[in-house]
Length: 299
Image (cartoon, rainbow, N blue to C red):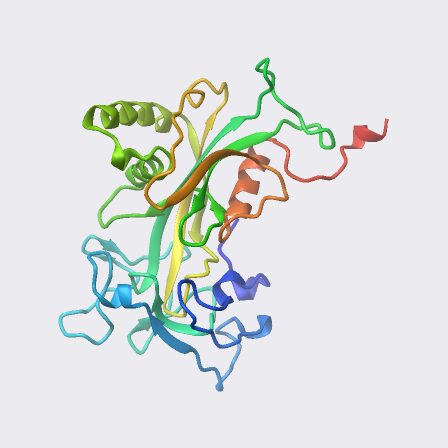
């Protein structure tokens, strides 16, 4: 699954939705055929919006472009901040980076801290759905085994999603995956030191097993703007026997409102582009996804 691009005939959609998350700001309307920057549109005028929480300059946010002592090195590793895109080089116009997937109807940074790519990491933990006897459950139509993954309900929008979060400056992706999973799925921030140590050992075993990178790159996210956008690295950790995840003490924490094991089916409605990532995992493991009839079903 490559990045979203208007040129590829798959223009981002959630990055053009209004109102902008957490606000009443309406984006300028951008029709599908004018998303790509390659399409000339001299009349294009996007709304300029950066949330006050970002302008307050928390440690995870850049200053405004044009401020003194702020000379970001776009398309490069800028100190501890990685301003490189996983989708290749992006253009910079008037000192502002330009969203590689096209127009969004809104300039500035919205809720995002960094100009350009804002890097996140999403751990996708899966296991086979099993009945009371421990046998794998198959779907009656596709006759494929049903896969489950750990899903969270986000506090900010109430949508179900893959757990995950932002990569701290200088942090390794592997550490982000473990940290975010612990904070959102196991409520590690509220545990005692002894409990945290026990969880850390459990997570180390879980995240040290064989895994595969599901996707790296641009994410069609409702927080994206013309000048700031989300990118992620989604990694699948699959527990084939279910032994390691059987005693996982799920408890929503940090930015998660609820947490549960969710069946992977094609009717899943998830935040941003998470459904596409989950579909890739199902296909990779040969699990049930679509509701299409299996050829043998007619026998």
